[in-house]
Image (cartoon, rainbow, N blue to C red; front, side):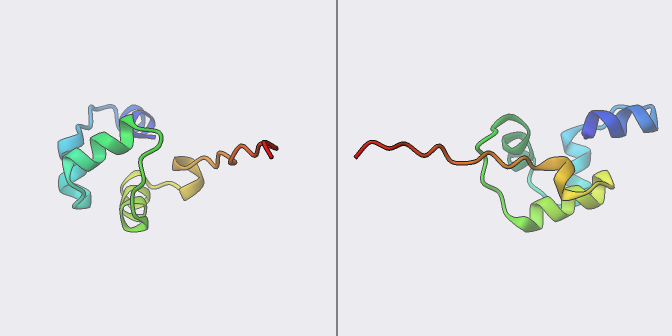
Length: 71
């Protein structure tokens, strides 16, 4: 979504800029961007949706648990 916003605005947007605009610590943004198993709060997701002007479904993907029958 960040790359799409950069393309639309024809400029580079750094994580520092996102951090300043959203109030989310830069290290947290880096973890969200690079760790698919990152567990962040809904406040952060809300701030990112506001900044990126997108829906939650644009940021999150549901991955169902794998159920095994190892009884």
